[in-house]
Image 1 (cartoon, helix red, strand yellow):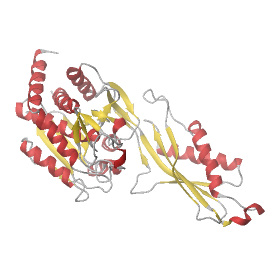
Image 2: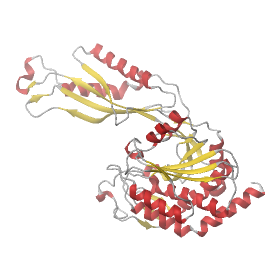
Image 3: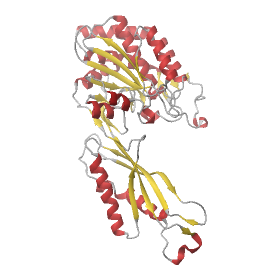
Image 4: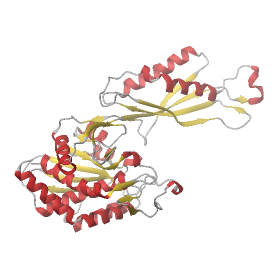
Length: 418
């Protein structure tokens, strides 16, 4: 590291260390503020963040809302001259708590710090990252570090509900940037040990099987087609053989290929005494970069045709999900040597002493909307915490990871905008 970079790094680290307690306490406040989707209402957490941003001199944000209680907030810092524009981004909402009996370390209704970990819903996914981004911007502004272009913080609604009021809506109204960094938790074995340069997409739908609804007492007299039994056979074939009938190119980030998940929803039957005339199973297929909607749909249709050819009694149809739930969310990726990727990796190594590994995330992120609809290079995940803890009981984020994230985001931003 050259002398100027070292001086900047020291200034950033010293400043963030000086407000360590404030950062941690504010993260705890954010986690205490419920913002679950469903039902979906980010108003209170947005107001909490606005208040802190004002106190930290970041000014009032611009607010973009398709629905009043689903705000997306944007804070902006301008550089000393024209240049690139970088956005640090994350979502305001969380998944619901679930059954509180499954939480062992704390009462989930009362987020708390235990053994240098902050426990509570949204701690790792992803309020720790949001506060890290705010603190990074605060440090840059307070130390008066110069950069070109613009640095923005974009905090979105509805990521956990499908993004209709968040990233999808923002992509519809449009905006510009040279790069986006999403602060989704990227730790696998230790914090920041990976950086997501791709995220998978998803296809959601159902296979509906038709049979013969009739009195169950005469089902053995012939002419009876039990829709549930037929559906079970299709589901089994779907699980065993569908992947072998899909067209896709190998991807080094995803050596196992797409993931087929049949039976995520099961429906069928009316009551005892009635042979079901209709049964269905829902599926989700996690797709790779490069896979296309029309080709995938055609492959599934052809697979069902093969099954129907082998079983003349089988009457099965493919029905994809309809709005407001998107049936198709394409995958997204960023060039592995993109400058923003290099800036993030360099900054993480500076703070942590090790380089994050470039990986393809198995899940979907908001990067799909930014990459595919706005053509903005986006890092799918680069944040404190562990994805394996997200959405489950005893979710936590390490206190040190929150502080490190602020340092890393600040240094990465300055490096990219130099």
